[in-house]
Image (cartoon, rainbow over all chains, first blue to last red; front, side, top):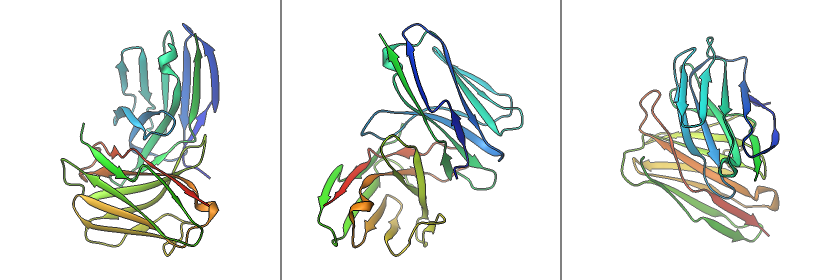
Length: 112
Length: 116
């Protein structure tokens, strides 16, 4: 059983559409990160959120940390084929420092 | 960002042999390193956390005698898969952190292990 559940698990959309990926848990996290991973490579960090309710924007990507620091969402506006990849959330449980546990992952395909 | 180098990127070994994977932080001191395992189209599963100079802490269900982790210096951690079997075939990824709370952990490129 994984600590963080992501939904949806798979998503295939047309270029230009919007989408939201959810990352949920019953545990509280001191911080939460979002990564994107290409096949055969290590994950690349997109953002770190640490404050409940925090919202961060990275170009067309908007990240939100839940008020209770148990969940997070990633919203992509006007998706591009270059956004295709595996999106992973990862949370550090309170008191564990930088020991991050990864979510179940969301595989996104953006069709031109 | 900081650079973490993982070697080798790919390895094929015979069943019953042991394989060592290295994880190096090239431009910072990594007091803590993490080892993950990833199956195709799945997420990363934390295997163990290693702090420099001390024994690694293994996650539940991970065999410590099977996956030997050594973190002898502030820039190097190694994972040795002992007596490898085909079911050990997987993508192994390390990450390294300076240890300060909420700081970024930097990932290596991963190692694709195939046991034949």
